[in-house]
Image 1 (tube, protein in one colour):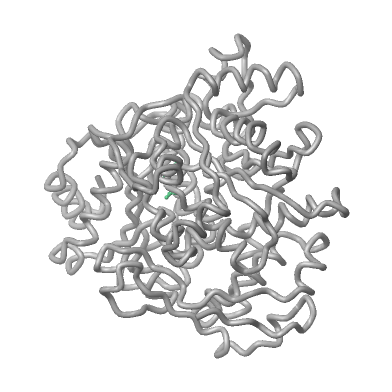
Image 2 (cartoon, rainbow, N blue to C red):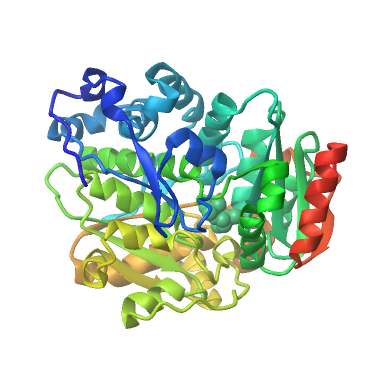
Length: 461
Ligand SMILES: N[C@@H](CCOP(=O)(O)O)C(=O)O
């Protein structure tokens, strides 16, 4: 059921009572009762192993879109997130959280005529995950009960781990356990979540990102463990990580519109691994954001592009690539994308176009764009850019690709590709020379469960 909000000017939400904004979440597997926002955030995943999904998607009024180019990020965030969170969070808390989360710029940069990069890497850990991780940490802090400590489990192929570690560092009553594929993340990404100590622990799994995410999900469906301790997840499977990611699509559109008042057609290319980011962009579109097409852009782990071409959804063991944050063979958010299109394959393929590139194409693109445009793409953004170069002539729109992470997070590969040094920004320099603290585990649930119990008992890994 989709609710249309009345058009009452740009501060339309101020006119709504908290009661009118009540939002529940159902499971995409439909085997679990609906949950409030607060319950969904604390639980992370429904018991039936689906994903929480909002029971209504509000359409924003036209006045909101006409004001959009002049709104700040916290203003946009407070307005588009209000219907999803406000009853549990309260209007003032939501506004306060949005002020605290969106403290860094997310600029739209023209790379060449008609193609723009949305730079999502100016936050504390230099990747787009900072937005969702900071938002979720504050929601969980608002909801966590003093006498019930929460353990946040998170699987990462590189960027989520560092953003969650940074966003949750030092929080009372909340412990974070980051699971990552041993040898599957870049050296600087690894330093970002293995060297912080305090309430952040790192576990290297002898397996892939998909194995890590499967272990996290298994922990949630382990009834004995979940009775012993409060577990939550900080991957984009958690609604508080997922929903705020839609904010920067509105911001991108506002910036683009300022530059292109007479152009109406826009495509956004989203480099994708776990597909939470693309699902968030499509949610923004469902709320009325006028984006003509989205591109599901990925590396050799081309599960979704293959599905869009063949209609057959087939997960596969993940393949290791230079764009490691997208080394995901079983994209966890895909059910949300299907839900947004009412499970209609044709409706989905009308809007979402698939694209994938291999390492050689990524490297060639980085070199070419650096030489021709003097713009440094990271390996993930390179796929986004390349997808637009190939698809825009047919789609006949302008394009924005998401620059999901700072190129220096992949310093070693970038330097090999370019044959020159890539300087680390301040945020990353801070990690040089620190000592890593890691527990190594086989890809086996019994080992993880034992470790979580031990941690719960002793308070440390
Ligand atoms: N690409 C991710 C994988 C996890 O994605 P998430 O958005 O679901 O947390 C990473 O960098 O860890």
